[in-house]
Structures are given as C-alpha cells and as structure tokens.
Length: 199
Ligand code: GAR
Image (cartoon, rainbow, N blue to C red; front, side, top):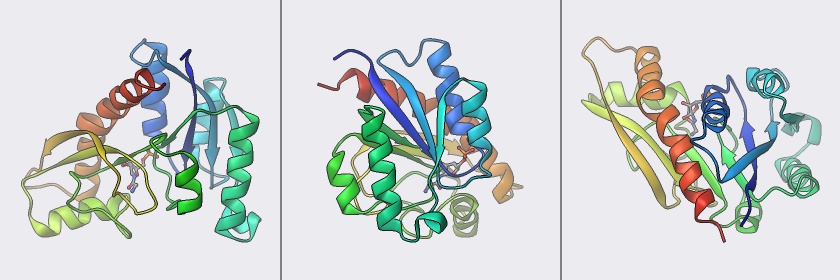
C-alpha cells in the first residue's frame, strides 16, 4: 500500500497530535500522512497545532449535531470525503459506538495514559487516570497504545511503556511525565508500525 491517509481525532490541547506531526516531519512516520484533524470541541488548541502544520481541520460537536449518533455520521462522511484509511484517537474524549468501530476494524488506535488494564475504561480519562493511579499508590504507571473497539480501552494492545511514579507527584506532574516519557514516544512508533503493516 502507498502511504495511508490518516485522520487524527482530538478534543483538547493536542500534545499527542503535535508528537505525530513532529514524527512525520522527522521521518519516524513514513508509512502514512496526516490528512485531517477532527475535533469535537471548537476551542481545542489541537486545531491550532494542525493549522500551523498546514493540515485540514474540522469541528464536529455533539452539541451542534444533537446526538452522538449524528455526530458519528458526520465524522464518517468527512473521513470518506477525505479518503481516510486510518484513524488515531489522540486525546479524543468520546467513546465511539460499535457502528463506527466496526467500519474501521483494526484501523483505529488510541493512546491511553496508563498501563492497561489498570486505570482504564469508562470514566478514566485525562487527569482522572493519574488521580486514580496516585490514590492507589502504584509505583509504576505508563501509557498504552491499543486498537479501538466499541468497549472503552478494551482493544488489542500494540505498545506500552512504563513510567516511574515519584513520591511527591501530583496528578499534573505525573501526567506530564507520562506524556513526555511514554505517550509522545510510543504513539508515533505504534502508528508507524500499524501503517507499515496495512494491506
Ligand atoms: C493524553 O494524556 C491522552 O493519553 C489522554 O488525554 C490526554 C490528551 O492530551 N487520553 C485519554 O485519557 C483517553 N482515555 P493531548 O490533547 O495533549 O494529547
């Protein structure tokens, strides 16, 4: 297959999107090309990052669409219009339905800020994941990149990286270390791996 056309779905700051853009620029990602960034939040800074990199953006929000089902339909038609082969969820805070995930079986990956199966599933997102890890007192956490199915954080694991928890960590300091030492490294590597294996 020639380069896969990639769409990245985002909701927030977009540091993982930035890691993908950087990896594309420095040749770590060579089997795919980011063609589209879709946000469900109009004020997501991730949109600015995409625009700065010259990548096409779109906003499709549940509020505007009236329902999650219609929001998903709109996203799917955007993906079709842009000939998207592969989807990355990079801080996308919506759990996609079975209807959506079945259309892209083994063609959607997600980055999650813990070592799955710890601190994952519905309700575990963003800082909440790190709050739960600190509350439990784990000494090691990390990040996971996995394929996406209709169950939150349940799909096959592609890559994981462990990160040490320090005694004086706050959810914020832990989140930052997990991003720097794990997410921003394994997301581009995992994306290149799966795109290079696409048939
Ligand atoms: C990241 O830590 C990502 O792993 C997490 O949200 C953050 C988004 O940051 N995703 C989840 O919790 C999904 N369950 P970013 O917008 O700066 O990439």
